[in-house]
Amino acid sequence: MILVTKLYQFDDNFVQEAYIEDITITMKAIILKGQGGVDQLSMIELPVPEPGENEVLIKVNAISINPTDIYARQNPALNYIFNNEDPKILGWDVSGVIVALGDQVTDFYIGDAVFGLLNFPTHTTPGHAKAYAEYVVANKADIVLKPENVSHNEAAAAGMAALTTWQPLSRKPIKPGDRVLVTAAGGGVGHFAIQFARHFGAYVIALASGSKKELVMSLGANEFVDYQKTSFLDVIEPVDYVIEGLRDEHIEKTLRIVKKGGTLLSLWSHIEGSKWEKQAKELDIHAFYNAVVSSGKDMMAIAGLLKDGELKPHISKTFKLEEMALAHMEIEKNHTAGKIIVNPA
Ligand SMILES: NC(=O)c1ccc[n+]([C@@H]2O[C@H](COP(=O)([O-])OP(=O)(O)OC[C@H]3O[C@@H](n4cnc5c(N)ncnc54)[C@H](OP(=O)(O)O)[C@@H]3O)[C@@H](O)[C@H]2O)c1
Image (cartoon, rainbow, N blue to C red):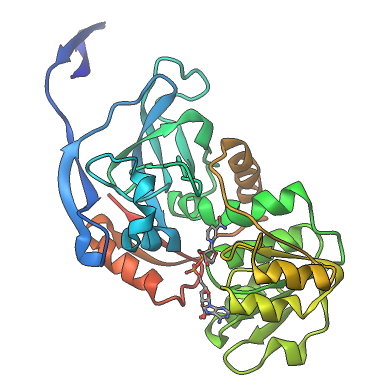
């Protein structure tokens, strides 16, 4: 059902007509038929969802694609995130315009441009945001107003990938002058991590392939190491902090470059109960894993940095909604520069 309002003008008089039309408006959405390859992604027509009392309905302009989308597509162990709902729709990062409001929403208006990381799951609780669609419902607590000088593509890019390191770094900031090593530095998370570390006054060493050198240096990195040509252990001085976006055995190496009393933030491998926890303790290093959470409050800080030009998302490729499989294949190459965006319209 939709409320239709029409405004007519007769000479100098305006007449407004309002009535309920019992029709279902549909939208294009990408569903996940089952967990597996990109052939499981399929575009279908679905009814546009209705916002609950604390929710808004967003017409989506841009969706950002993350490696998490790929894991969730492929890994049956992550089936819990969909909360047994049917159809399954991936996607959490969006930017768009509010077109309908729930009854309890007083802090946003129809027409507001907003962005955020919507309803992201934890390691134990579901989070089915259903962002691969022309319209998405968002909890008002997960979104923030998009600054006017920031495009929808840039805003969508600065959801999960920006929050992932903003959340731990803003709670316990890096000290000015700290030497910070960022691994996977040219990717979505890494290219924001460089900028946050610089924001807190750090000296930043970026580890990436040669193709990312220009990008990471333009974002403020002080040193660059091409991991395909050199072992960072041979060429860099010890660091105070590592932002580790790589997996398992790489942590064993990065722990060796952290100063006594320093910190290693792991974005992939869990530290608690692992062999790296033991290794870190022996070396007197604070090593910890941190998982990103949806938070409109944290998005507000990100929005401020975007507005002031302190945070610059880099978008290397864009795709149409019907090209979602291509966007996934691009992330799967594991050589993404900055962010990949999908535009429904
Ligand atoms: N903890 C959390 O809540 C959370 C949230 C989001 C993401 N993550 C994790 O953070 C990591 C990064 O995510 P992302 O979104 O930035 O991924 P991404 O955009 O796909 O970027 C991955 C980057 O890694 C680089 N890379 C690959 N192998 C490398 C190596 N051996 N050494 C250095 N760089 C290498 C790739 O480019 P080049 O090889 O060309 O340099 C690419 O730029 C992933 O493991 C992801 O799962 C964690």
